[in-house]
Length: 255
Length: 255
DNA sequence: CTTTGTGAACTTGTTCACAGCT
DNA sequence: AGCTGTGAACAAGTTCACAAAG
Figure 1: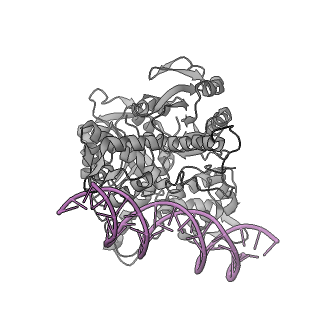
Figure 2: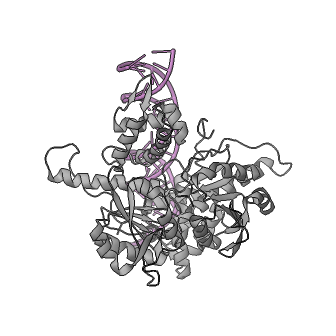
Figure 3: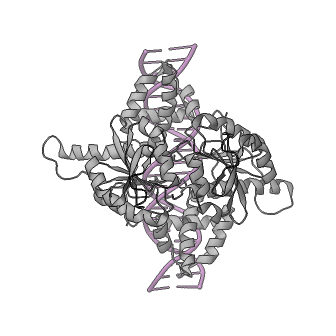
């Protein structure tokens, strides 16, 4: 069971805090933009603004990677891109399988940013025999019977689950048994995996519920500021306005 | 600019820590499952296992909501479902607009879990005139020209952005100007919003990069354990195996 | 005797502020 | 002079462990 264990944090990996790791992709994206515009160097202040964090945090984050900046000048864009890419393991190729080619699976398969940065869709897998052979995003869908073979033949270590909730755990078990050690789960279920396997989840309804909570609080605050003496205290302003919650970071894709 | 400000944490809302808020939807989902199976009461231990967290954390989380349990017995499932729903603001109806009806937007529109819990897709909006009128998930797509009217007519306060990266900021600006105060962003861009507007992001490529980092570390650890000679015993075991990173929580949808 | 609810210890993450390079 | 890199202060989040309640 994933939960019962004493469980070490999965955090600091080579001394790099998990919170920092979660921000590196953000910095990398901002840097890639600068690189494309041929900007040679950037200060912590500028880069932080582009990534939507504050500069002290960014400098602290970079300090875990080493001293890649030049005092009085800033950071060399190309060099930083390389260092962060290497740190994230993007200098190598990661074959990925997507299981569950419904609306979402197809959207993921079509997501361009996939191929661009180290990841390659090695196979699309679906349980529906009618889907087999049909190309999605130029890749023919394969039947789930082939799952184990596909994973081992391609040396896949990252699997994306985009199946309905009910199928997620069985699919997960098969992926793990076949050798996958990192899973990105889009199904609304808590997956149970053995130690040593990483699971990250992306959950639309949870995100919406968190927004609803804050939305409700905003409304309540307005009411409290106006109306009689219910509960809830003084309407302190200056609430949100930072990307996501501070701690962690999910992942994206355009339409 | 969202970043430059001194910026208060967006955290504790009515004294409920952000980390707790992010877990409430998880508890709610587990409880809904129990409710459907007509389980009357549940202990912190059982519920925690179902939600994939540890029981002390769960009890602490619930303590912020009040004392809804019975010592020696556990929690009343129905009562807890109600309390958490209310806390999250799910007892009211939240009209949502989805902007950008590509592969992903369509997947989101088709996501069932949407309607089930307080959320209702009020409109689908796309910039492509060819899409206008075409029904997706039974809802006719409307052209972006109508965005402002749709938002104000329906009292929409939550917007979902599923456009390509380039369109995200302009769409965001228009949504906010029209009255939206919570945004769920699927585009791979940092959005800049005024104070008082919440943004959460869901970013596939960031999630994959975080997985790649840990994946690489696993490989490196094996190599280190094997040193230069034979590959044998693993270094320290007991790494990952908890859902997502600890701090934060994204959202879901099946295919 | 079982299980909650919670102060207190501890861990992780963020921000400050300034010494140290260039 | 300007900007990085970082120790030290602070804040948030997690876990422990046990008293209080049923």
